[in-house]
Image (cartoon, rainbow, N blue to C red; front, top):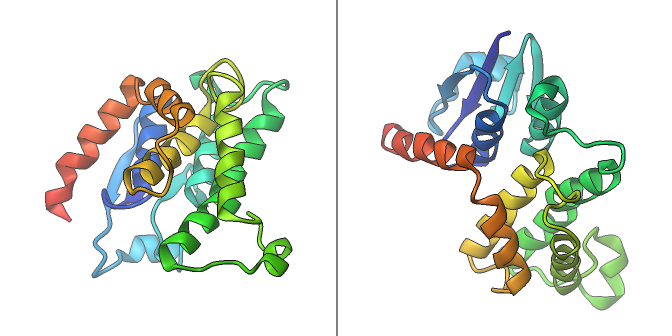
Length: 201
């Protein structure tokens, strides 16, 4: 198996690093400098965006897609959903990647959706999006049920970042969920690797 990971430690690549440490398969890291994208990255992803992986010739970009792909491509890690978990797994991973992230970006940019236009945006209102996330992480220990899956890598990363940057309220449900997902040894390994790489970028 050949797995190449294009990343920068100050990017969403940190999500994929965590996922790679969870699946525990060998991979090659290619550090991407913002000032000059390597030709090999531009060849597989003309946008030059990170994270991007190449796994046995298959190219996958977008952090949520990479997490979902790796869970299925490497099932021995046990991070793909069961049939009973699949609906919540897909729903909340892609809610977080789509409507929730859009709500957070609009919040940072100072964009307020007029009430008569709420139907045009995937998150309706910022408050409704945050309330939906709170309900999701309160329903069970993990986002898809009673066990950790790849969806928790993505959702957990987002909850951590949005909390760190003050975009999410300090609600008990978010704190309890973060405590569970951040106890993963793979996350500690991933953070140590990326933190050590920051001076090189």
